[in-house]
Amino acid sequence: MKKLIIIFGIFSMSIMSCKAQIIPIEEHREYKENETEIPDGAYLKDVNDILPKFIGTWVGSYDSKTYEFKMEMLTKSF
Image 1 (cartoon, rainbow, N blue to C red):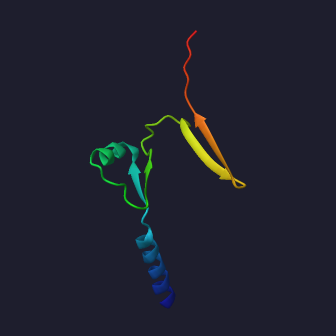
Image 2 (image 1 turned 135 degrees about the horizontal axis):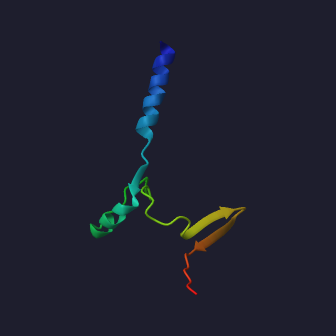
């Protein structure tokens, strides 16, 4: 019985401590128009696949070096 109470306590604490909030990228305009800040711990995400894949700026670091890749889509007609 003690183990069950401990497991339930740890489980309920882990659920309550999860404060990350995902905001769909479509709502970013609403935040800018209303001049409200994005809540702490929240981040914008393309949950509905609106943006094209791989297009944009990708930033990463490895061995104390920072890398930045800019991907653009170009269309050429002949």
